[in-house]
Image (cartoon, rainbow, N blue to C red; front, side, top):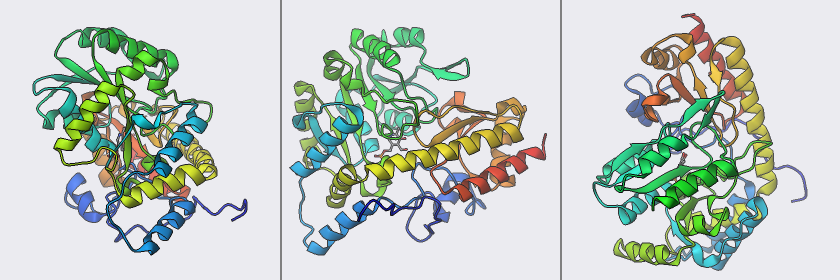
Length: 403
Ligand SMILES: Cc1ncc(COP(=O)(O)O)c(C=O)c1O
């Protein structure tokens, strides 16, 4: 293949008729309402870029074999994952710690079911990825919010509030979103240490959702929660996946890292009661794709991050210049930019109306993430620059009419 780049993030790929959740008119109508099926979609967190070519090549090779029988997550899969974390994050994962799951959202539900009882409380740091609250409520547990606070223009954890909240013995689980969707924070070691210590002292198990850990903007460093110290590793479960990083979400492959043998055994037994093999959960092609990406797509990812960063800078400069007062929070990780439109003095309902009706753009509305997200919008910037420009121009023009 040589060192020639075989990707082009500027290229527009037609995703129509591929069952894309992000682009499918029926899904847009369901999510945003009648008449909204043609919104320009910058919402669901997948990317409008082709996955790395090595992924397709590995899948084609496997496809050609033409026997698609029961598949286990073989040594190649765990080795690729272990080497990836060692290279990218200097974290040493023991192969025994790895269980496989068909997605981080399903895993979140499994963990809630196994490690809490109906009526227990599960803590989340709002505004946060809304399937967390949905999973808690759907399983008959109670959502306990530890709202993030904005201090000096940056989202921070509120440790005093956290300590008060987890002192309640009904709190069994705390979900850490690291890096944080939607506020884009890459938590520092000090922040994670304080968070982990407070949870540990109160016997609250930490579920660290690190699905965005490979999408780290220049100048920032992701710290793997379980790598901070053995006490944290023993009091936590980490979820990770190659799906966000390499655009593989439809292949349903993710992992849980559980260093604590007792928790791992308890969880494995629970998995058996669901009729799933704790080490064979996922899909044949999900495992192939993950392995290929971890082994061969590092240059692609390094380039992707620079592309995303340029997109972010464009978004920030344009929105803040064109719409004075609007605040685009600095993006430290993820490809999801969090924007506060409240300073424009319009109601949250009006902000949504302008974005959908005037601009014709589909964004994740802030109030989906919690009440403290009202008036905010989340832009998925993982798309060719020309699409982002079209969306940003439409949004600025939409708001200008009202200013
Ligand atoms: C924090 C977080 N967790 C989990 C997911 C989805 O995980 P999966 O597709 O593996 O269920 C997302 C997708 O946006 C996410 O942002």
